[in-house]
Image (tube, rainbow, N blue to C red; front, side):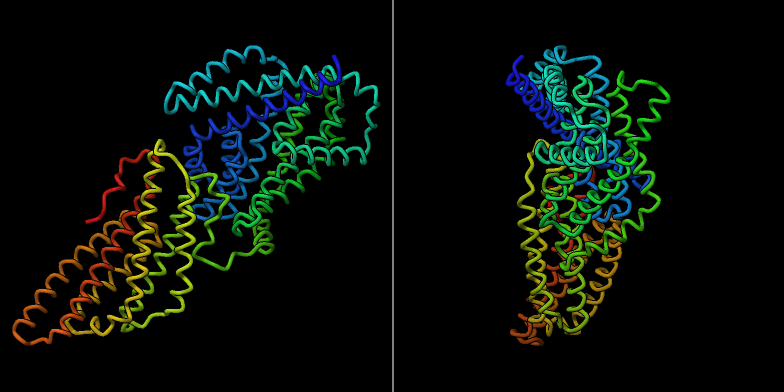
Length: 538
């Protein structure tokens, strides 16, 4: 076999493996991503449980980036603390080692490449002709098949390359050699954008006898460090939470890589003392080493999660704008997480406007117009962000959540403009006839704020609807009363018009409060809920 043919087999095999990983990951994310996110929030109560759920989620989804992005979104939404999210990020490193076990146990030992061809056809047929979950299962199945077909081609290429590589006399094991191979592993991962592909290629070369164990171990360590490069690049221009997460990933993997380098020689010595010649099952020892130093790294760092978290906050403090800080563009890759972040931002913006409304009602219309002007761009930024959340109506629960978020923002924008009118109607609102209505509205809004702070969404929906209903009834009564005074010449028409304008303003303000609250509470229902979020509030 010519060197050209060997390189074609290796590059083709690597390409098929990468394509298979991408397709399988996309299929698995479509099938299980929403469930996995619920698992992350439900079972992450500490860094330890976060590490376990992060490892399991990454093992199922075969995507550490999806797990990490979800963790960032949950921190932004206030569902997790940064310390809890760190556990998920650490655990994701363990989950990525599952791919190595699949390659070593199934791809290399059982050599399933030929057997996967009919399975590939089945997956493609399901993707083309099935619907719903069966369609996505076919997609994942096709990707799974391509992975092992790619490994089979890699094996063919590596076995042909063995004699050529050995003739070059690979450098003897030394610290300089190991550092060079770590650098090569980092470079390989940066180029392929996949540490899994690098690990698969390394395992195949080791199985074929093309490289020795110490070469392979150093390469895998480099690939583990290199996998953070993509995450680090993705954080450029992102929010402080995303940059902090990316830096945490880089810092942790770098420290783990140093530890793993120091462990290569003791590990080889231990295995040879225990089993003798380790070349017989070298690929299994390599994936055990890969999983082992990642597990050991997690066990060593988790007791110091709080200190690690404080260090990250000191290096990357919070962004200045509190209203759009969570709208990170990197989260748009995961629409569910982006919707959750949007909900958090809208809730925070609504609370600001409620505070401004209370100020206007209690202080004779005096409001901080400069603060409102500084706030206005955040609504525009939020609108642009939500417009960039793209998904199909096939995912109906998530589509309904996005639909509700969009309506909440629309009413929030109208609510903002109503509050800008507060100073112009302040004189009318201070009339004695308005005292009872104004006092009750203030009391109800203050209670509503407490429910928002407690995330008591059922109470939010109930009270906000009650506010609109009671305000509507009271304004109807006052309108009739004012018109009666005009008819009996007890009230001048210009003054009556001011009062009627104030009544319309109060009525519209209470309606916006009710509708914003309704739509924000609707988005908190999980996938599969039968709640109809398209019906407007009466």
